[in-house]
Amino acid sequence: MNRDELKLSLKELLIDGLRLQDLRPDDIEDAAPIFVEGLGLDSVDALELVVLVEEKFNIQIPDEDIGKRAFASIDALTEYVSTELLKSPE
Amino acid sequence: MRRVVITGAGTWNGFGAGVQAFLEALRNGRCAIGDMTLFSTSGFRTHRAAVAPTPEVGAAVPASLAARLSRSDRMALAAAREAWQASGIGETKLAAERIAVVVGGTTGGMLEAEDVLRRRRSGELGRMPVRGLVAMPVGSTADVLAHVFGCDGARNTAVTACSSSANSLGLAADLIQDGRADAALAGGTDAHCKMTYAGFNALQALAPDVCRPFDRRRAGLSLGEGAAMFVLEEEAHARRRGAAILAEFGGYGMSADAHHMTAPEPDGRGAVLAMRRALREARIAADAVEYVNAHGTGTPQNDPIETRAIKEVFGEHARRLAVSSTKSQIGHCLGAAGAIEALATVLALHHGFLPPTIHLEEPDPECDLDYVPGASREQRVSVAVSNSYGFGGNNTSVVLTTYA
Image (cartoon, rainbow over all chains, first blue to last red; front, side, top):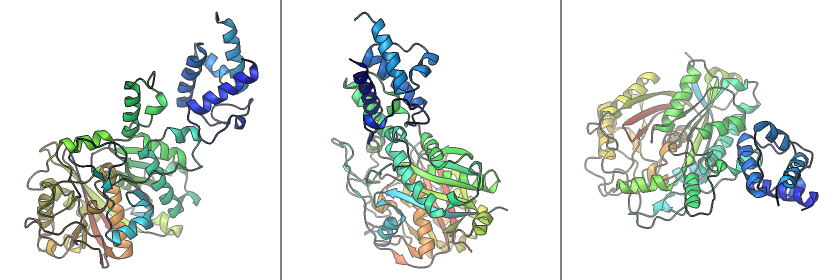
């Protein structure tokens, strides 16, 4: 999966997983904050989103600090997931 | 003493969206009780209920929040939006921390929680989804309303079974009278859910066809769902800003039957006490009351006991006042019943008519008051009482009057 495909797949996961009706992947800006401003997601969404990403990519988001950085934006999340995927044995 | 008036109202119920639709249905004696369409009622003694349409959440609510609102939240939101806009309170200079939110309910997001549980047990869901359950607590509706309308004042939720939203109105009025708030978004909401339907079925409290309050053939209640929300406001504040005042919240009275989990105390002592306390707080003489919006569930137990209690409180005057049960039209909306029926009462005061008790054709000899059977009646009303009684022995009566 290249970077653009990963980005799209993360946006789709966010939209489907959080049931954000009426939102398309193109509506989500790569560099915009995912929480509070930007998409307006909150801590309850964060709990769900962390589990969704962990399950889909079989990676771990071990603590809140790493989570905060990883979920700062779609760009940041793409970076985090691609780095973690490189570490995994597959 | 600070007085409390109603400057906005909204509803969502078996008659659909809004106060106007509700007013027309009350006046025309329509019935919202039909088939339960939200889930299977296979094996139950009835398949009937008053089902409300499903409200849109509206563009003002962020998509992620909208996706996890319960049906109870959505109905409350629709009713609150109507009340908020009608009152114009959002355009005043009133500070957000002076606006309270008080909601009554019984089961909150139970319908959605039941669905999550079903999908989890069937293996469709690999784990319990957090977002599918955050709307389950009854108190979450008040949180949602406060966030959407930006109310930073006192927040509370009344959960006293079928008197919940009569109590939420009383609690909100207390906050304003005590000076803890200047306005409040207050009311109740309750959506259908399997647990409630199955519970009332097991108690054999559901009418097989329709609820027939005060009729000798009455065989139980019909379940309904919906929401009604009000903007309650300190009277001087409302007057200064030139708000249109629908009615005055005169007072309320609470009492408890320490008697039985589901049956009312046979002499109606708790009901008598609640009505007397409400009248005393409102400083209204019993013989000034012209209309009583009864709890009137249509169960064999409630109706004669409530009738007896009304006779005890009003004496000879009981023969002159009108009594009716809005549950005959929209079913028993449980945690929302107190607020929806308070709205029916406010509409009676504001528009000058008596809402009917429909399906009442063969009066029970033990129920011998004027229940406005069959059709509404045009009549000016200036003082009214609305009764709400809940399982566990929770009794609340509310006094509402025209504003003068």
